[in-house]
Image 1 (cartoon, rainbow, N blue to C red):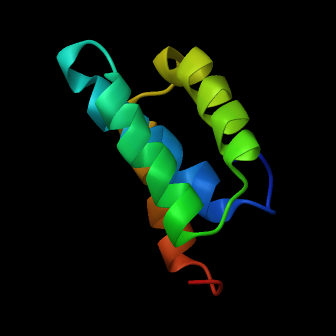
Image 2: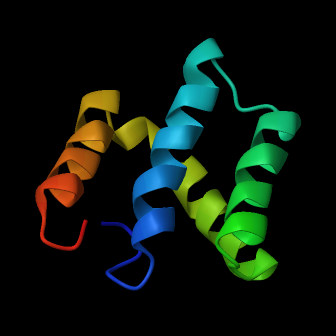
Length: 82
């Protein structure tokens, strides 16, 4: 996990969402706004925190494959926390 155990929703879902959004070669502002709004409106994350996290994820997005990102979700789903 990139941000630690305090942010599992953001840590698991945001990089995967950004990776899917980048499938056409770039993440548009509209796509970024939708992803940003999801975490702020649905999960109650602070907008400043979300912006910082999304910037971090975008900077490192090329380092992870889609398979690696979905593996994190699979492990989370198999855990007792799910």
